[in-house]
Length: 156
Image 1 (cartoon, rainbow, N blue to C red):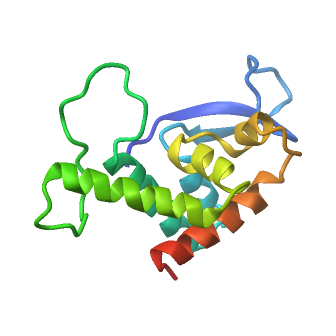
Image 2 (cartoon, rainbow, N blue to C red):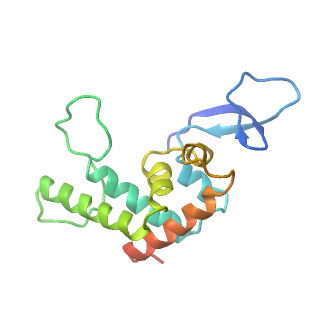
């Protein structure tokens, strides 16, 4: 796993984006760690919830749903797709269908935070602000969404 360490200051809402000042609480964070991995490493997500999020992210990447800056002709490489005998286009289509079905299984109102944190890699506090939710409400909603996605993927 890649590690990109940076020292940041914290307040009660999370990391500060201002220059460091004396007397503030500081922590070292790994900028290469996904928000989902961060939550799981600190015990906020169960193994099943983490596995469900990783399965959803893997389908997102296999379906090549992220926005591209330029035309890409190369396929996304993922391990263990389990879809032997399918050509790359069929694997991409199957991943897209699984992704859409998993998001539908999460349901309306839950899929927004799920997509932002799992697929877009947005930190949970940023997702809460973007969705105009109260502070610290996103973790509960994300856990509910991941439980539903775990049921879809038959995890845990």
